[in-house]
Image (cartoon, rainbow, N blue to C red):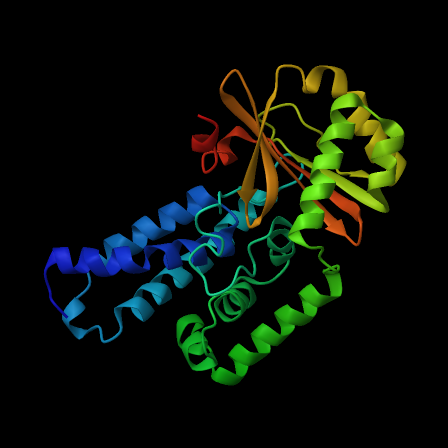
Length: 292
């Protein structure tokens, strides 16, 4: 290939969405994914590009391996994280699949489940399910045999299948989110209860930076009472903007022009089984431009 820096930049730009998509699915953090992509660019600059036969494959390999290393240190930090950890929301309005072949491994609930996989299992699953990489490519990237790569993906699929619930249509999720917001703003306890499954869970991620519940709230009545308890002051003066975050209907909450939360629901059948409050201000950078 052309050895100039301009040519290297052109190649990098052409695959950048994919590199970010890989790193984000691996780490669940847009800011950390950006750091990985920047590191991949620096390594691409310093590489003897004349001997690279497949630049996109090379860059995907570098990004995945950097992500595996970063995930190992990120997990150590998350062990001391204050309160529930939720993925950092990303705006998928213009890129529904975030640089991938499919939108797999992008939703909030799935990203949380991916945290339970080993870094290599997660990498193999992401490359296969979201980016449709073949097993010969996966085994080269994660540096295992092809048989081991197949086993990694198989284990990951089985693990997730055992925990994943039946997902609803986008239209149904939007309906439930809209109904939840209406009931939450008025503190309608009966309406909230009707929207929830028996074992619904509310997760609030404040990261110890802002005031938020440090423990998941579990159960239909408990979550309904929790939401009602703060409705009189929480929603006052709040602007609600619909958005598409992580491939699912969500809302951005802002007050006086400052974004302070992203809220969404995860549903099974015709009821909500998870309410997600992303409130850590350090995690809202990838969506704040929409509320500006």
